[in-house]
Image (cartoon, rainbow, N blue to C red):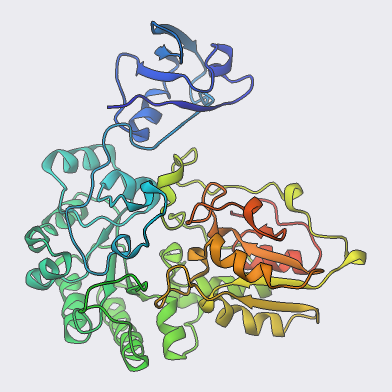
Amino acid sequence: MSAPRVTVVTEASPAAQAGLAVGDELVSLNGRQPRDVIEYQELVDCEELKVVVRRAGAELSRVVQIHKDAGQPLGLEVSSSVFDRVRTCDNHCAFCFIYQLPKGMRKSLYLKDDDYRLSFLYGNFTTLTRFTELDAERVLSERLGPLFVSIHATDPDVRAHMLRNPKGATSLRWLRVLLEGGIEVHGQVVVCPGVNNGDVLESTLAGVLDEYPKLATLGVVPLGLSRYSKDPEMRPHTVAEASEVCDTVARWQKVYNSVLGRRLVFAADEYYLLAGRDFPATLSYDGFPQHENGIGMARAFAEAFTGDTAAPGGVRHGFFAWVDGAPPTGYRAPKVVDASENEPSPVGAQRPIKIITGAYGAQVLGPLLAAHPRTDLALVTIKNDYFGGNIGVAGLLTGADLTTMLAAEPPGARYLLPDACLSEGRFLDGLTLSDLPREVEVVPADGRSLRAVLDGRPLPVGCQQ
C-alpha cells in the first residue's frame, strides 16, 4: 500500500502552518494508514491530527502535530484517489472500450477497474463481480452512495455471456443488497445489437421492475465501437434498431411511472440522433440524473444556450477521469472556472468564431448556431480518425485529430474547444494545448458558457469545467 503524496498545499492553511510541503508522503494519520481518499477525508476531518510524514531525501520520517477548528479544511491535495491497489476488472466484455484502444497511449489508460470506490468517487460503472461481503459492509455502514452499476441484462445467462464471466450470472445479488440497504444506485444497460436488444431488453426492463424497483435510474446507451474492435459479435446499431430502443424506453417509462411514480429509465442522446428523432422535452428527463452519461445532455445544452439556465450538475467527470487526478474536495464537487482566465475578445475586435466538435455535437449545435444573430459563426466537425468506428462524441477527440484539422485551417479565426476533450490539461493521446499548431480557447461544455462567449460576455460565475 502506498502512502498519500501531497500535490498541493493551500497557503495559510493548517497544513502549511505545520510545515507540510508538496512531495511529502503521509505515512499515517492518527495512527492509521488510509486505503483511499474516502478514508483520508474522514481522518483529516479531526481537530487534532498526528501525521507521520516522510519527506523526499530524508532518511527518517517525522511526526507533525496539527491543530485546527472543527470542520476546517486541512489544506492539502493528494496524488491519487486509491492508495492501496485499484481493484481491476475480471470481466472480458466484448464491448469494453479499453479493449478497443490503439497501442501507444498512456499506460494508465489501459487499466480496467471494477472498483466500487471509483464508482462512488467518479461515477464509474461497476459490475459488482468482484464485490465482497466486506465491501457491502463498508458501503452500508459508511453510506457510500450513489453508486453506479452496469446491469446490461437481468437474465443470468445473457449477463454472464456479455461479461464473458460466469460470475456475471450471480453478482447482481449485491445490487439487491445495496438497494435494500438504502444505498442510491444508478444502473446502465449497454445495448449490443443482436445480443441484448429487442426481446432481451424488454426482459431486462421487466426484470428491473420485478427485482430492483428501488433502482434510482437506469440509462440505456449504445455501445461505442472503435476501429480496433476485434469481436465479430459487436456491430453498430442500424437506424431501425435505434428507433426501436427509443420506442421501448418510452413505453417502459409509462409502465414505471404508473407502478413506481417515476420514469426510471432513459435512453442516451445518441439513440435520438441515430434515429433522426427530436429529443424528449426537458421535463421528461426528471432533472437529468444521468446527464453525465450522455442522457439528456443535448436537451440541457440547448435549454442553457437559448434560455441562460444553469447546466444540470453531473456526477461523472468524463472518460478516464479518475486516472489523471484525485477527486475535488467533496468528491463530486464541480470544478469551477475562473471567468477572468478565459475572457472573450472585446466586441469591437470580433473575429470569426469556429467551434470545434465531434459528429454528434455538430448535430446538436448546428440548429442553435443557425438561429444565433452572429453571421460569422462556423462549425468545425472533426472526424475521429484516432479511434475510428462510430466514435463521434466530442469528449473523445484527440490532439492528433485536432492537429490535422488546425494545420489545414486558414489564420484569423478564434477556435473554441469544449473542455470535455481534456483531462488535467491533456488529451487522451497525451498531447496538450501547447502541442497544437494554432491557439484554441477552451470553453466549458455547457450551453450557457458557449452562448456567453459568442455574445461577447464573461463566462458565467460558477460554470463547470
